[in-house]
Length: 302
Image (cartoon, rainbow, N blue to C red; front, side, top):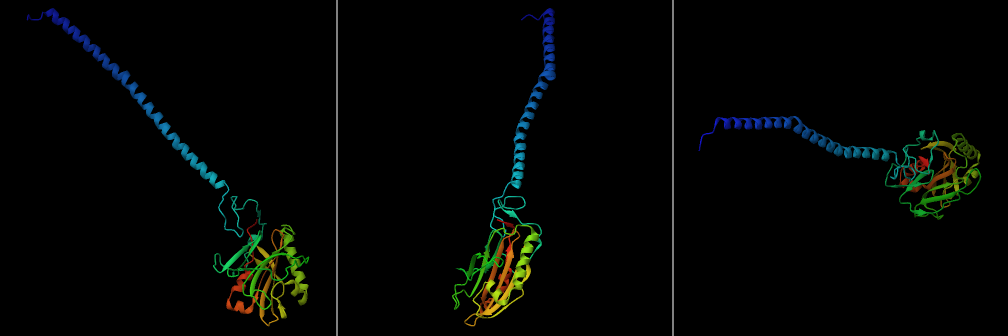
């Protein structure tokens, strides 16, 4: 093969140089425009993806917060431990349709010698405005004696629980009763309610022993009737006129009993009492006092 001529070599160098220059500028363009553009597009994609991923998380957090707030302010359907069986409806625990306890009554604590909450020997009878307790073993339901409103003489609605064992007069050897009449009769003004209670105390205090015996509910007293001076005492969230009495039945059995005359903070006249043979109370020490003290006004009127 003949050796390359000098002119051909010069042409080859020019071609190679031109190619090198083109490649050089192509590399510059690649690094200056193309790669940054691609990098920018990738970063913007990451930013959108991050934003899209974080948005549901933020919404979920907001939703949980809103749910918690709604739960706190929404009515609760859980039963409350009140002296009335009701369902909570408001932030202050007042059930739907209930009437709040008028001011001032919640400060009254009443006696401390009462059945403990959940004490297995006792059951609680709850009315719309109050409650009282009796022994669980007292499953006999009956009416013991005539219960009347001491002011009007009107017969009062009554419920009672007592022992199955009966005495010679056909009455449970021990029982507790509750009665009420004329719901809201005196209104809910504390001054008027207290005045009504005081009027009951005055009337009972002015009664003779024979008259008082007709007002009280208990076992049949044949002789030896004695009573305490009627006096207003404090009970949980309420007041009641208390009259204790003792007597003997026709069979000569000793009776020990107590009656409470109250007007609830919502103006409803009520009566509660406990009566029993002294032999029964002696066999169950402390029970008479606990039952007599167990009357209490509810946290609200249901």
